[in-house]
Length: 491
Ligand SMILES: [Zn+2]
Ligand SMILES: [Zn+2]
Image (cartoon, rainbow, N blue to C red):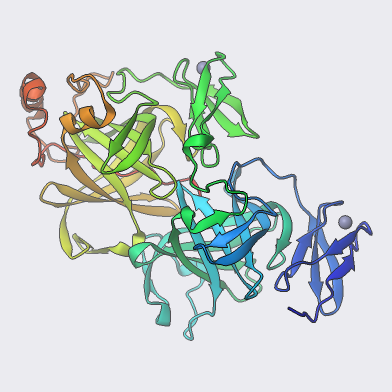
């Protein structure tokens, strides 16, 4: 464990003593002056002052130690908080996790309810495309690392950090990045820096946070224990928060005030109209869905316009714990679908077809889907009126849905689920799903190309209470099939 670099040093900015614990750390944030100090073989340099850390709850923290997969000891040696240049003020955080026995390290981050770890890898011999060449949804070939799909392209910047870091990140400097998805949950990030140095490649995968057992004995996955609450700054209502480390925006269920969550408190932004229909699954309802404990944390009504007609459907955001992350339920005309995120690398879109796990889904429709109403706890900065381009591909009753925002593309699988299954899963009183009034008078229906839906809806509503569970082949009416929104949230 010897190192050519000095372990003991003095902060060049303020003179405070510093100790470098990890040989592979190229920088450290001075505890006293908050400057990031780079160490090289020529000595130490103060690079810039970090901003104050934002409180983002996490079971990890600098100094936390444990064992990885029950074996190799690790230490959380540093933490960095990063935000998007085009959406400042909503940072996420990544942990610099070091393995003292081997000198290895990785980044660990949680994003959109899921956990990832990545390690730095050599660039492929053929290099990588330039940042400007990358488009969300495009496939890129990384040679020995295989074929990847671009999930997100953007610019970010380090706003705050603590502890040791593997490299120097000048605070505030915009750096280009691209997130990539590979098969079976593989995940990678290309970090283009400020463009003055070669890109860096980080490769990893989604992890079950239970691979980390903490010496403190606190389970990393103890998310249920994290449920806390905040007070609505407008009406004083008590609002539970299920995922405090992931939530960026809360829309008050009582008064509709839209607020940002920062530093454990809410900052009121503007009121939003309350949904005209109550959620069939109430906010806070807990249930068991496909073996996962889930809790309903948000309710949205979305719509699209086809041939001058407005169609609407309802969506429920579910949190399914740190291993699974977020799921969605959507309901249109009483047809329910469970919506699961797919790794970008698992879906291959070619022409009018989307391939997923050996299945071929055929183009069904493309719509601009916008948020009309929202209430609850969201992992992105939701806005009424925001829209994404949603493209559905169909195979039997299942859909692969591809959603494009300007800088990001997400993929999801929508599978029919019987309403009575949901009644059972959530322990609800059996009753009809909400009628499709949507507040604006227009009826819901297949988003594109569905004709004569009004008649069908009337029939559906009449028979629903009798037949709600007989809905396995819900093809037809389910338009807009539509995974979670993606813009904004998380990493
Ligand atoms: Zn200092
Ligand atoms: Zn309120």
